Length: 123
Image 1 (cartoon, helix red, strand yellow):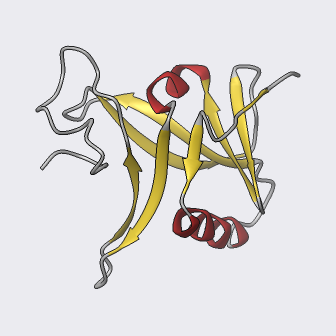
Image 2 (tube, one colour; image 1 turned 90 degrees about the horizontal axis):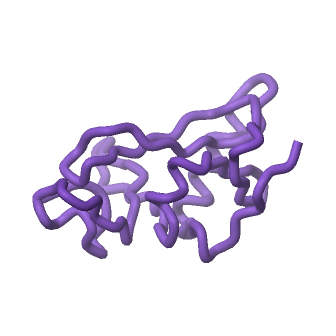
């Protein structure tokens, strides 16, 4: 099996995001290959993103090797994530989440703010 090696030109993680992913990865029992980032239709930008643990790497996956874990992205999702920075923001009181910064708007969709450098969803 041949996978594509992703670089920081494809996808980057902030230090808080990488630290949180290491923490989550260490809590998992079982055979986990990495953290899969995926896209699904929806959201105001036309695409919503999610993350889950995965136990396999497919032929059409790109892998970003990080210290202590791998980020795995399939070709279809990578077209939306190229150049994106994943951050982890903790606003306190249980309000913490991963945020996707520098998203590019999808043609014909959106409210006009999703592709901003502010990241995440629309405001």
